[in-house]
Image 1 (cartoon, rainbow, N blue to C red):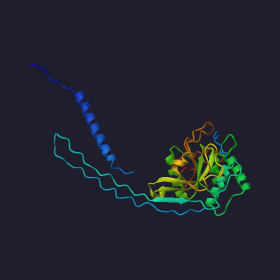
Image 2: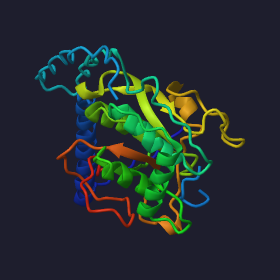
Image 3: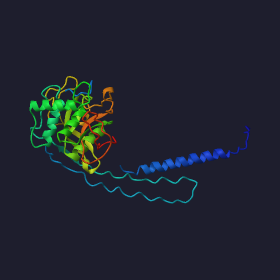
Image 4: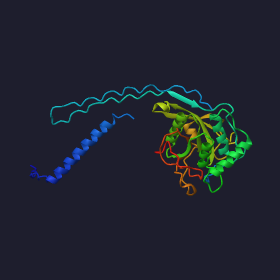
Amino acid sequence: MIQRRLTRPRAVPRSVLAALAVVLIAACSTAVDGAASQLAPRATPDAVTGGGVGPLVSSPDSPADLGRVPPSVATAPSPAAAPPVAVAPAPQAHLEPFAMSLFEAGDFVPQYTFEWCVAASVQMAWNMVQPDVRASRDDQQALWEQARELSNNPYRGADGGGWSDLLNELGLGPYELVSVPEYDDALKVAAEAMRDTSRPVGLLMWRGRHAWVMSGFESMGDPAAGDFSVTGIRVVDPLYPYGSSIWGPSPEPNQLLSAEDLAKVFVFREQRRWSAHIPAGFLLVLPLAPAVEGGPDVTGGPGSVPRQLRFGAL
């Protein structure tokens, strides 16, 4: 017969018991917090070388009733753990398709040189907002010179800061140059600003080397009503129909691009030593709702004044 040696259990020190109690309490707290959270809703240099609102359709339905949280259930003491209470997921609000376009026939203006993309973009922004049309070469050249004077660039080009300042001097503002760290957030910021102001958005393309105008967008859900996601972006490239041997052909004026296609040319711009005042990110020349305060100005051009930024917390 095999005999087993019996040993008397040793007493657990009180300090160990206290530590175990803390661990058990923390584990229970974590489990409760987790269950509660499931119930909550929710170029080279920086120099850029290179009207009316359309029909607004389909706003989302009112948010659905999120239901009631089941009341806690008291149970009799039992050595066995109480079975978990199943909680049905809260229903999501149904989002309807929404579309907006500022572009009309006659708004497109080509850049007359390979350097005047900012000036041509300013002309097109004017055409989308004002009743008259600016499209001449002489006017574009004059706007280019103004943008250069307002820019903060050692290479004497027009940059995003000069672009936004020029729009303000022409009375189309307020506009501000902003940098958004994430691509999807940049699209949402641009769409929300266009919806709020009925003015176009400037896009600094090709890592800050070229200027396009965002003339409209499509989304699931109306940005003015709350939750939404951008599904398409309408753009105008003043370099059309030439395009770039590196970045590809220019889209047709007011062409609708998917978010995936736009991401190939609207790319993250790294911070540079000659423009350290501009944070790295996706750069927008953004129309702002008047009298709405926010964060600091990042334009940095000699014509800049400390204006208030609508999306300062980006």
